[in-house]
Image (cartoon, each protein chain N blue to C red):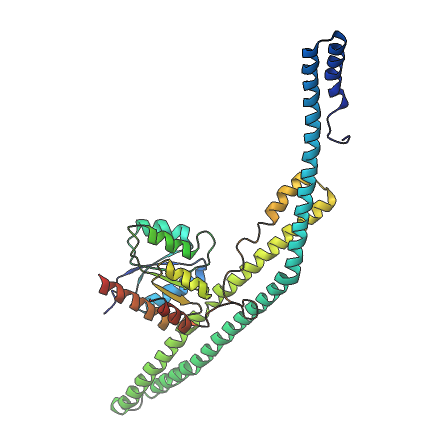
Length: 132
Length: 243
């Protein structure tokens, strides 16, 4: 199933370099509508006010970490079904299991390739379209 | 029970005088009332003593905690921090080399395109029909080479992710240095002033420094335990979990 190229993304990472990289990769694979936030605390109001179709978040951030952001998203009736992709350097098995249990839609570890990111986004979007 | 901070012996003067008067007068009620006042003064003195012992004990325990924490920091976390920083050196060196490798691969492609463009521009004397075949070959080659350059530039951009990964490691080491500084500062204060109450408050703060733990990228040789080795491992694990 072809992904919707006008989807709006929120990219959450405390490192501006990584936000820039992800934003550029998203542009390259056809997603131009990208907003940035530097941790869960700033991301959550944006998610609640905005009309985002996809959340890509880091895990290890000061303020509200990505796992907490994921839990808050899943606990919010309006955001509960938002696709959430964790893009993080956290590579311990127990962390991946924890993220899965909290309802993450996909998990990509850093350093990553553009192809991996695209593949995971496509897979999540397709699964969501099929479920709709 | 005599000592600094204990109630002044004068506090006993009134109840003792009252007891003496009541005893002389044979007034049992007044005597018992005065005895009760005497007990109140005495209880206060005992409580003050107990409080001082408790504060001394708390101070000793917290000094012991700081000492134990410092031993842990010196024996384990400082050497770990050195290895983390060594890993940062490797990450930054690898990223710099990767970037330079990619740039070096791009340069000959750009040079070749430039040389051929200049050659074609210089062959104005050749009839356009004869040049057409050369131009077509050039354009095809330029398209191939520029696609390769474009791909390498995208890789250069991704290689900058080292800043995030090394930044997370540096941040964890900064937390450790911060904690070391506070714990050492506490020891100095203890030695200089011995201000038990102040020390007790500050020690609690000093020991709260390490609550974030060492999060971030897995550093080879330090972060043992059950970590995945790449994206394929992540996918397999998530698949096992039914995702």
